[in-house]
Image (cartoon, rainbow, N blue to C red; front, side, top):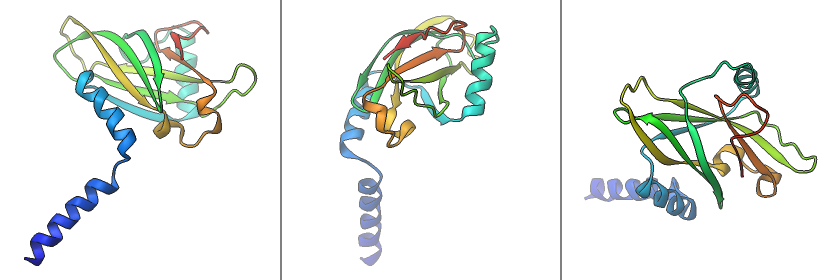
Length: 164
């Protein structure tokens, strides 16, 4: 009897301590309707600078991806993206250099790296990927008042693929 009670208590403790109800509800709504992909969030200035320099010099990281549109929804950015594939799970990485440009207009730059995992299928997939800003930025003061410039690694210009 003690064992069953302890097991039930542990399971309930784990379930309730690992989630924020508001964030989980919003995130689950997106997951149920859109994406089966993985999004990795990183803050790494040297990695950002290296990929960004390569991007500008027409040396692309990862696989091609088209950013169709995006919007901010609370602590999340929803990005509609398209790519070819369909046979394997695709992974996405958002890389932030950790810099908040506070001069007007306030903004932050993100790189979107797409890995197709050698998916040779040719279906044209459109899905929504979710960026959890709270997880990526933490308690950055400007996160609610700044815009977000998102570049894919095939964009060689200084104009972002999308500004949110």
